Image (tube, rainbow, N blue to C red; front, side, top):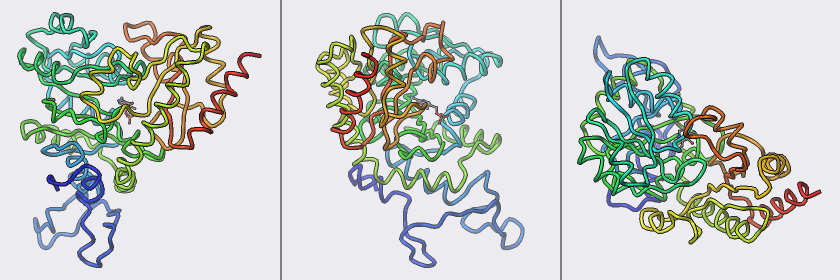
Amino acid sequence: MSDHAFATRAIHAGQDPDPLTGAIIPPIYQASTHVQDGIGGFRSGYEYNRAGNPTRNSLETQLAALEGGHGALSFASGLAAEDALLRGILRPGDHVLMGNDVYGGTHRLLTKVHAAWGIETSTVELGDVDAARAALRPETKIVWLETPSNPLLKVVDIAKTVELAHAAGALVVVDNTFASPALQNPLALGADIVVHSTTKYLGGHSDVLGGAVIFGDDRFIDQVRFQQFAVGAVSAPMDGWLTTRGIKTLAVRMRQHSVNAQAIAEWAAARPEFETVYYPGLASHPGHEVAAAQMSGFGGMLSLGLASGADAAKAFAESTELFQLAESLGGVESLIGYPPDMTHASVRGTELAVPENVVRLSVGIEDVADLLADLEQGLDRIAH
Ligand SMILES: *Cc1c(COP(=O)(O)O)cnc(C)c1O
């Protein structure tokens, strides 16, 4: 598959028709165990489904192909994937350096769970090369970055960060959830490992939780696969199948998400009600040039800072109709959220806190004129 373009790989990798019946879609192997032909006589290597399931394994083949990786592992959620990766690689005394607006749940996992096992974590403005260099320690094992970030859409130069981290002997892990592999491929820019919450754009239809770790080479996959097997936070067959189905339309969805978000960002930039528009597709965004160089589209996420403050932001988030008020992102339907009280409540009061006047939009693929009219009527409602 590796000589085919992205949209082709997304549809065909790991998706050979069923050899028994010719069914064009491989079946969902909804089973917990496999019959053995005599003790140890496994058919196609399958034994017990925590160790391997054909539906999950075909999703893993598809995921590796999306990022141009050496291999991939699929989990029950994005955080389960991150947890298995971190436990597979880190040892007590190791340090993780993270960008200062990574996903709040990732920060919570490291500082509230892994800290008890002797893992140190600190955060830095990764886009500031001098600050990032100064924050690296001899114990730094992983530099963890997210670009564009959540919810402020900060952009970090992946290749530059890789150069800096590798020179200090650290690995680079990129959480590529926001961009999706349709728009950005961190492994091709030198990153060692990519993680995804497949709950978001890869699944794409707000109907399944999942996570993935994708490896650039063969150094770490066995130790993380051991965590997957020994701890067991695997994706279930039906969840894996829904994710596979979502991935097949990823390329075309991401194009439309990007077109709609760009139109909304340009509309918002001309409205006095918004003091800040956080979207890397705007030439005025500080990360625009880097994003244009390392992404093939700017994606469907944008945040808006309301000029009249926190109360206006909350009222606006409760005033839209097509943009439904909910956590999460990346589905075909548009969502709006108030990060300080919702997705980012766990980082309030920390160095990752989000400005109180910010709402976050996950722009869906509905007709953009309808989306703009919805935002207009939301502004009208809070003005009165
Ligand atoms: C949602 C999300 C996660 C966590 O994934 P879950 O599937 O919710 O466990 C990690 N990183 C980013 C950027 C996310 O948006």
